[in-house]
Length: 352
Ligand SMILES: [Zn+2]
Image (cartoon, rainbow, N blue to C red; front, side, top):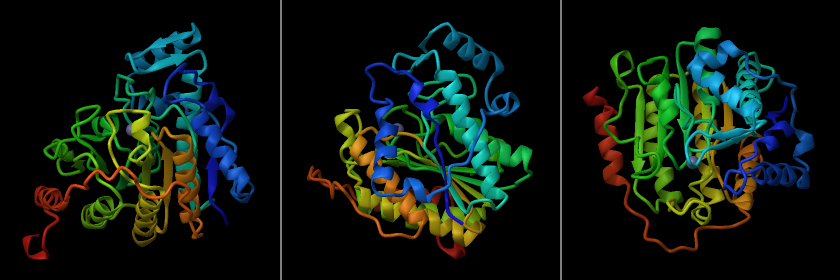
């Protein structure tokens, strides 16, 4: 049984004009997977747009209607950096449908894991506001479906996009059924994701933010995933893992978004994905679904997506671009790790 890849050419029809979030991001991935023969070695399930009720379980109905109707009239801008066109609502709704159907298929054992190769991305979209290139929050739609529709009690979302997933955090902020863990550059867009944002009410403690200084690379990320993400996930005991997979912490991406200054390589993403795959295998029978968020350099992105699929297939991985040549000194993440562990009580066993 092989993994499933959810992709549709409609995702290319979300027209953003001259913008870093553009269709070549996906066509580069498709071409790369075809080039190495992987395209034909994974399943390509059919899927349908998300049901309206699945969208309104996360988003304000007025917002969705506005988006749908404005798109039909040719589109517009949700924020100055978030254009959308005639096909954008349909593309976003289809991406959410892919996410729902992927988590269903993995939960039902049809595939061990799945990857959703879609755009527009989703993790900045809040309950009533699309922003940051995102229209509909696919991760939130799929995970809420697992909780409300399939009765799961504990779902883990890990978001390794270089930006904080403010929309995902917002939607689950008071929900103890969903543990949201984000590693992101901070301060940076969208200015949320501080250490002190930990959830509210019944959801207090179920949001874990790891706000990273600029210039963190493979070594720092590996330490964070080992010393914060893994113990937090183990304590939560998820029944399902959903990954907001943004690859814009790659060292090439600051050429596309100048505010990004991280130094992760394809090999570094490989280590993160391997850690997440192993956690899913340890904690929830391997059930994990990846959904593409950011990542703007077509070569780095396609290499990273290929690496992710190879990790899921337990195959060897190559890094087409190698380690960061920037030579920016890597900050010591030790004090940050200590802080996050303290705030979230992930310290020694004697403290718990
Ligand atoms: Zn991003």
